[in-house]
Image (cartoon, rainbow, N blue to C red; front, side, top):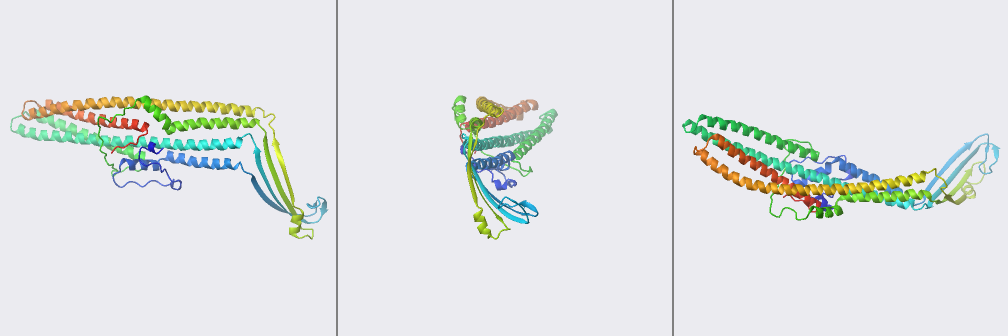
Length: 445
């Protein structure tokens, strides 16, 4: 299952001795692998699931112990005054009598129609199901962190675009002021660019606010305090012609249904329910047990030595205990009926898990195709707008167009750049999700 941790060496989990501790707050920029590791270490839902596994382990130990004989030992010391029964003769006597009783007993179930064995097997199945549930939780946490991490990278690019737009407008404003002062351009061009500069400032402020918001979301996903020092290492993300997976959504589903932990957990839920039916049916069968007892006592009114009396009064007994359920007031029938219903519910849960997985893959596949088309369209669009802006800039500097036309060309270009960045990162993340369903490690470097 390590490949479902997306290649980040995340299988170590959380040490049970450190559940109460929080991961160290990073002091410098963190990469994606570190971010995922911190999230897995700090996630409380994951910790709760791992603690539940300890409970399952204790239950398994207890159920396995039912296969073995129990052993109890004890003793008592009593003093009686007046008329009382002598434990040695079992006759009433009027005197002080002190006695010590020692005993031990053992009992083991010989036959109960496989109830104990099926209970052990069911508990092992529940434990295995729990492990797959933990892996599924890790996968969900990992994908969420990757998504939030990519959003931060995307918003960093948006800030750069806003800064470039602001700098371009500032350069043109300075040039326009000189031309206005020289009488080459009307004063209205200067006012238009000053208005555009103010708009670009607002855009930059909003872009930085959005970036801070995405950084906050990532920090909260890692469950660490958010400060202005929190930074990430930007990976080099690129798109090439072979980036999109070649498999169909149906093929991806067939691969995922055999490997995804949530499906395995659902299948084990059905297996556990089948053991529950066997356990319930065992209620119709007889139960046979073997028991043995040892006992001795000492009475202080006799002159015999303590050891001699214990040896003389030593007794043993053994016997068989047979219990036949003749009429359970429909309890066994109700238990079997409930167990059958639980199995059908488990089968529905398995079907729901598979349907959800199929729908998620179909959605991811469709979205990835759409993102690929959008990205390619944005590439074509931005090539044209870059050339249009270059020509508009030259014509504006020569006074062939006014500031309004120049701003339109500029805004169109930066809007296209922003859209291209959005399409790029959306496409990258969606294809990485498909890689995840195929069991491939995700690498954003």
